[in-house]
Image (cartoon, rainbow, N blue to C red; front, top):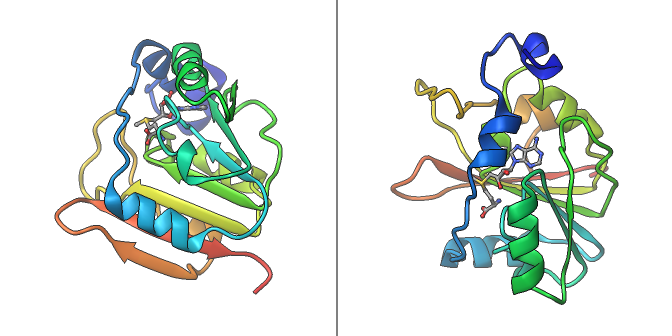
Length: 173
Ligand SMILES: C[S@@+](CC[C@H](N)C(=O)[O-])C[C@H]1O[C@@H](n2cnc3c(N)ncnc32)[C@H](O)[C@@H]1O
């Protein structure tokens, strides 16, 4: 059992799961383009759990981080003008940026570890596109209370016909 598993009391080993599973969706939904476009603030963008980097074209000064080396290799090959690096966001230093972006990432971080990730984030603008699957818990899906983790949301939009929500948290307002 890994340290992470011991800490959150879950037997879900997110590291092995995402090392094996390559999430290589490369389509940006219209609503994602609109929402991330409208709600970013000037400055750097750091995407946590960026997968193969499909959202990177939406941002100018961008760094994507993911634990899966194959995803980062594909992202670098596809979006040569953007920066990407391999890191485990739970255990490694993540660095900081004015904007933090996540899309279908925090929903896969187990309870007990997601709090540690939230504490690492110092950005003034946090934009999350995450599913809230109340009452449904596949071993690799977690339904978090994002306002408990990040404080009162500045903006929330539910995505019709999906369990996804787009949420913005602004620090210092
Ligand atoms: C469902 S995919 C979403 C990928 C991307 N955000 C997108 O929307 O296309 C979840 C991603 O989170 C990554 N991931 C999961 N746990 C991670 C961790 N602890 N550190 C870094 N990346 C992680 C996985 O490798 C995977 O690429």
